[in-house]
Every structure is written in C-alpha cells, then in structure tokens.
Length: 297
Image (cartoon, helix red, strand yellow):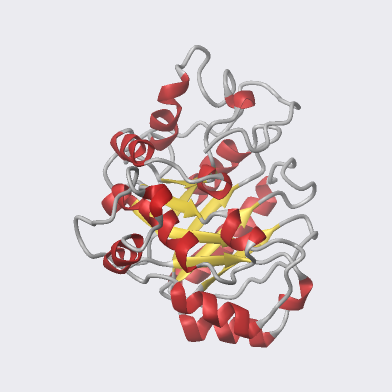
C-alpha cells in the first residue's frame, strides 16, 4: 500500500464559515457532514478544552463517510496545566470520554505544548511511556478512569488498531537534535507547524506519520496561503510520501475563512479528491474578517 495523505481543517464549527464555506441556510448540525463530503480529515479541538461525551463521538462517527479520519487533540489539562507530569488519571479520563467510539475513524492524537514549556527530555520520555500505542491499550488505560467518568465512559474497543501520536511544540529550546532523536526513539511525530515565524518550524519526519498544521505563513491564524506557498507544501508532502511516510495536514488559518478553501486547494494539487470524482471549489464566495477563533470542535 502507498503512503496515505489526509487533508482537512482544525475544527469545523466556526460562525464566519456559514454562508461562505457552508451554504447559506445549512443547519449547524449538518456542518460536519458537509465538510466531510469535501475533505477526508478534521481535527477535533473541543477535546482540548474539556472532556467530551460518548454521545458526541458516536454522532460524529455517524455523520461522516467511510474512511474519514478524526485527529483528536489531547486535553490542555494534561499539556498546559499539568505540563505532562502526574497525568496517568487525566489520560485515563480522556481516553474513557468516548474517543474509542470513533472506531476505525480514529486517527492520530495531537498533543500541543504551551509556549512556556521548554525541552525536558526526562519529562517527555516519561509522558511518552504513558501513551497507548493501540486502541486496545487505550481501552485498558480508559478502565483506570476516576469516579467522575463512572456513568459517561467507553472503555472497550471494537478492534485493536495502531494508535499514533504527534507533538506540537512552541518553545525554541526544542530546536535541538536531542528533541527529534527522542521522538524517533519513541516513534512520536513532531508536528510541522507553520506559525508565521512565531514558534519553531521543524520539518523533520520523526515517525511513520508526518503531521502538518498550517496556522498561517504571514499572519498567525489569519492569512491565506498563496498558490506559490501551496505548491511548496505540495512538493514537501510528495517528498515525504515518496519516502514512505503517511501525511496528515490540517489548516488552522480560520479567522478569514481561508482554512477550508486552502485545504481544498492543497488537496487539488495533490490529487486527493474526496469523494472520488467530486468537483472541487477552492474559491470563497465572499471575504470575511470577523474572528472565528475557538468556537467549537
């Protein structure tokens, strides 16, 4: 089998997308279904802010087509508040919250570190040792949840599948070979994060998956990607896949409704047509300037 390429957005519930990417009058409950008919992946960001419920994960599964993929963002309680230390129970609660209900559509887990947390090899290695590497291990970990999850948990999986993890860093002390060597030793993907120069951009493949987050190359969360910039990213992705790496790309430049259109434009360059034979509309219907940050999953 050849390397897989998945392209999508970071979240999908953004009011400014309505009437622009989403057709006017489309019910909010149908937005994920609409997005998943045009792109083959999306990040669930609501999991970063709070534990979701099994009913939500089941609904998202049912609203998306076969072979769709969800990347799931790990909770900020683990990454930002606990700073990866003493997180056995929070991790168990997270995996018990319904993540396993995504079944065959469960993609990589995304862990985003805060800008205040620098490189500490020991801290990272201890955290990596806790991460489940299959849905079966995730189910075992989920059974160790605390009482708050007693009546709102899923602790079983329908099949044992590999589970991959990606780490996004935002402190310049991570710009060292020791960091990427540690990731390779633990088979963790470094997130290739384009942040308009604000945080590290590490373009190395440290595992069998290359995870890319495009937050904006000129203005963080806001600027759209030019045709030239998308051509360059398409070239990098072709090189990674030629080397045998799967690639997952999510656009997070959502403020001016560029993320879904940039994702479609990149998919078009790479021949990632979803569903097969569908027409690709890569032009926004109208411009937007209102902020849409962090308004939903």
